[in-house]
Amino acid sequence: MPKKQCCIGEGLKKGAWSAEEDKKLISYIHDHGEGGWRDIPAKAGLKRCGKSCRLRWTNYLKPDNKRGEFSYEEEQIITMLHASHGNKWSIIARHLPKRTDNEIKNYWNTHLKKRLIDKGIDSVTHKPLASSNPKPTTEPNKFDSQEESNPDVHSSQSGSTSSVSLPVSSSFNSTMPKIRSYETTLESDFLSCKKRFERSSSTSRLLNKVAARASSIGNILSTSIEGTLRSPSSSPCHPNSLSQSSEHMIDSKEDLRTSIDLNIPEYDFSKFLEQFINDDEAENIRGYSQDLIMSDVPSTLVDEDNMIGDITGSSSYLLDHPNFMYDFEAEQD
DNA sequence: AACAGTCTCAACCGCCTCGAG
DNA sequence: TCTCGAGGCGGTTGAGACTGT
Image 1 (cartoon, rainbow, N blue to C red):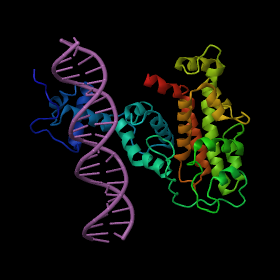
Image 2 (image 1 turned 180 degrees about the horizontal axis):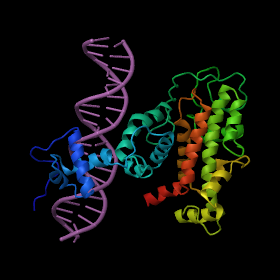
Image 3 (image 1 turned 90 degrees about the vertical axis):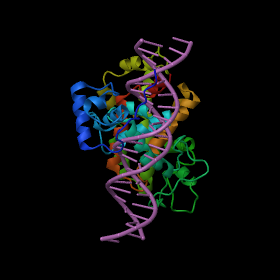
Image 4 (image 1 turned 180 degrees about the vertical axis):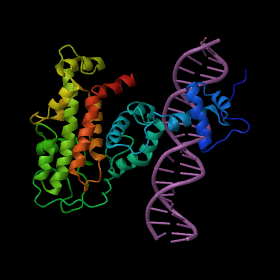
């Protein structure tokens, strides 16, 4: 039997869908449900191929679809997942149930990819571009002369210049200890971040922002993963063990949310990673953290209120998805 | 106002996967 | 085991919107 070719036929229409066509398709799927796409055009009175109908429905007409601006939280998730999966848009879309892979793909290509490149990060590997410095942000950053909080970070700059980008491109691995030595012992809740901003100069506010987000994300991850480590029978890299141990550690999500451990003194995220995770995975997580930091708004536009919201948003996602890291492995397996 | 260049994103293309027979 | 076809997927295109001159 000769293979019936899709999308090739007399009088099949291409290009943008009209409102009338949309109406016919919606009406048909409402009455008969999804599936059997090959037969839908004829039954619905459309001069389109079945594939075109399916794409139109899934990408645009489906009522579940969330459209419009991507939230900061969504951007963070996409960036993190892209660091792990690359251009596997369908996998990424599964973590954002109301977004289509096509929409995510478009958003990546038109916004997020450029943003990473502008920050000096390779949009494929999610690592700092080796041979080039990040492009300066739209406005130059001015390091205050009184800035003393983190001289190490200053030393990474060229010294005399007053126009700098975030001091991360040189190497996130080497930046982490600097951030930690600056002030990563966070207090009991996110509001402590705000206190620190209030008493800091513009530059240290910027550094605080970087440190706070790195610490915050690190602590969220550690709180989730430490549950696994403390469970005597668990294997830290096994997806099931995490959920089991989480039950022991955390009575409810709300408990976790309120007791999230921001009191770990001299918290050493890098060391923590080395304890239980292989080098490649540790590298990936550093990559996620770096992306979270670097995908921020231009560094000169520090908005404390938004930042607190951003941290909370990113953290909330991780709280809601305690198996987040392990889902990657499960999917890849 | 007119034009050119750039950006966005819906839609298409072609290949791949997987289940049915 | 092989073939076929439906559906899924990622890359690419191009029309329209937007922006700058």
